[in-house]
Length: 223
Image (cartoon, rainbow, N blue to C red; front, top):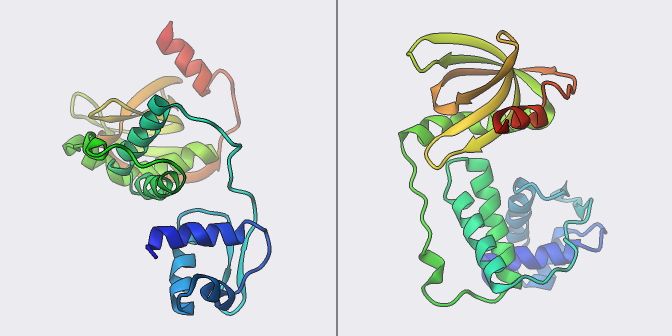
């Protein structure tokens, strides 16, 4: 059995919401207990809501299924290409999640026609490579609404220090930019992530403010 197939089968076993010990799952899948331990570590590291440990057992704490849906061939192709683009991108966390998602998609959809799987490639440049270390921190801060302190090189080559409210990451095909509210300038700014020289998540949560939020930022740039 391929490892991807075994991981999918383990998820199906856990979907009943009950506690399952490694020896039971190993017997059902005809593999060793050590193999189950390694597979469960992989599933837990992928972000699935699986809890447990060796000698105790494993349980799925919340459902991970989507409502049934029917995709047209163009929609399925768009899904595959989008997942592959993220999988070959620079953000390691999202790339790992995209590879896991690709495995799940492949297990429940028809195989693509021969030759179609390799028609999309992602090539990263220096700008993307310089931005890569900052992307996981920025995504986390955006979700948690944490204020950030940046050391930034502006277009004139000058070093500046900014306290910002991060709002969204945007990818322009070559560079990543960060949409933010700049506290010092009392206005919205877009920062190129590859020009960030230092980044600190202060852990300070900023309050929601419709005049300083993402909708207001988008309204400004579209006006």
